[in-house]
Image 1 (spheres, rainbow over the protein chains, first blue to last red):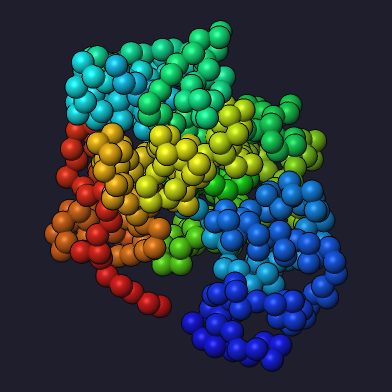
Image 2 (image 1 turned 135 degrees about the horizontal axis):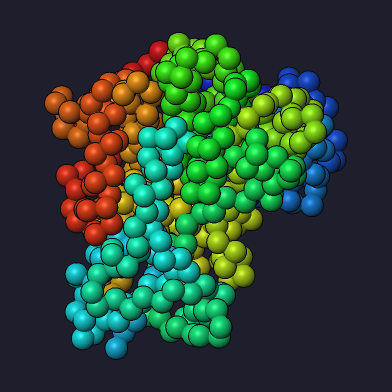
Length: 103
Length: 412
């Protein structure tokens, strides 16, 4: 774990750059992380991000399928929003832990 | 008379029926177990059927042999649970009232959830080995198969027994080598995860073994549909993998009764407190085994460890004491790696599989994250333990809580 400055704010992150405390998150941080990944955030991106934050706060396991059923975007659309890492990148931008599979 | 109802007479439900009947006075507590099927399958054995190592006879017994005397058994489906009124509605209008309810209805494979899966190639060139029908169909297929691209694919998480697809490719590698046709079989494993296993140290060990055995890995591949005409798997980001024979883990979902009862998530797994094993909203409902949405493996070993915690907490609830037992997500899996060898992993919610010895620190006899013959014998012996001890709720020499004794912290 390390502290880094993102969008003029000190936040705690993992080695892979995921925020360890979702309460340190704000929209500027989201935009900065997205830019680093190469994504420019639209309202649609933010809807997904807010959905993930809400579900994560409720303690639910996050899956691509769950986002696909949210009514915000279908799974194909999710891949188009976050190419190469639909759940990993969206979670990173949302300031929540890296999604883990239950094994 | 007070009533306990157990929904599901599989591994989890049968263990609980045995534990509870022993502990609770028959004059005070009425116990009923409900299941729509009469046959108990030893599901870890399904893995061996495609390769002709086990036959159907080796993996099936009547459920009734494992239910204790003094438990009411009802072979019927469940329509829904009316949790607010503590009532279970069964098929054909029957009704069961309960003081405590245990949901142990497991997980099922849902091939219909993936377009093109249950189509014209189903059980011709596409198989699952999570059902007896699929395992037997694949056994027949392999007898005359001339080789080509063998693809083992995982559609969705979570799924039952996370190491089974790996074991499948390891056993297939041995099977086709011994048949003298390994050079004609190209083996690939496809997963939606970033690696073959999600925990880094075990992934490293298993990935090395896959390279050694010349088995290809395609990771981060999330299947959208299967094209039966072209015989290709297509992912959501439009990648393609061709196959001649496809073995698949279909989407896993909990019982539809969970959805009708409004007690679970979008995959019909019941919202469950991961430590107390109580249903999230109703304190008189407990959840055991694959039916729960707790973040650990869907596997018999987990149900076994969780059963001890659930038993303690249910006893506390009955006696009006606080629920102090906390499940740690303990899982313990033997991994068949082929050629009479196996690996063993032991882990929980917090601790990933580590190397060491098990169950006795420094002694074993089983080696954690090591590929040994004794681990393979452990898996073979386990079938006897399962039928004769585990289902009957007898004590096994393994603690419910995971222990760090005998494990080594490693970094790499």
